[in-house]
Amino acid sequence: MPARPEPRSLQLTPTAQSGPVSALFCQPDRAHALLVLGHGAGSTLQHRLMEELSLALAGQGVATLRFNYPYSERGRGMDPEPVRLATVRAAAALGVELSAGLPLFAGGHSMSGRMFTLAQSKQALPGVHGLVCFAFPLHPGAPDRKRAEHLAQVQLPLLFLSGTRDKMADKSLLTEVVGGLPAAALRLIDTADHGLAPLKSRKSPEPVLEEVARLAAEWFRDLSRSGGG
Image 1: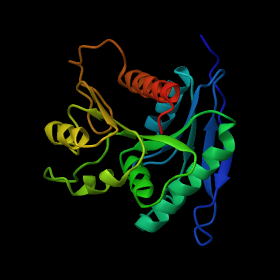
Image 2: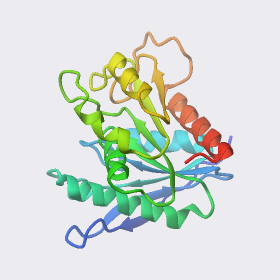
Image 3: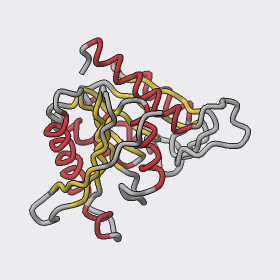
């Protein structure tokens, strides 16, 4: 069994006003890709989901760069959208510096997946080959497409990994949305909810986060082989 990679503590500065925020870089032996990985709205880079997802990705040969937003670094409030967009841009730029020839991807859980797609829809993220959304928050309440309107302007391959019980991403609606995008793929995770937690009735013996990491790693490899992005 490969040794568990030790994370390296770093910092990035989203804006001059926000000051620096924490980041963790984790690179396994023989990594084949680097993923800049953001957390969900009510979380931090050290949340259990983020740590376990990073470890599962390392097991698939994917290095990760996790990061905080200014508000999650402070432990309170919520940053305005321009600050969150500046944060994901700064994280992607740091990812370019760390990639050392590895294909670079970006995305995150819930809010961060949305922030990366929003940022890319407004202005390209240099060096990023594709975006992955773990539990994309398609709708905060009743199902609608408003949060998907910008996706048509994302000029990068997209991967959506979504649980079949995710109350923020109606399965039928998300399938329609992804099906209408030219370079997007959807992988549904049986019985997982928005936090990627499964039911005991899940039939697959593969743990959810290991499945999610495997599917993401396979997509990264396929894109790298084809020269996509």
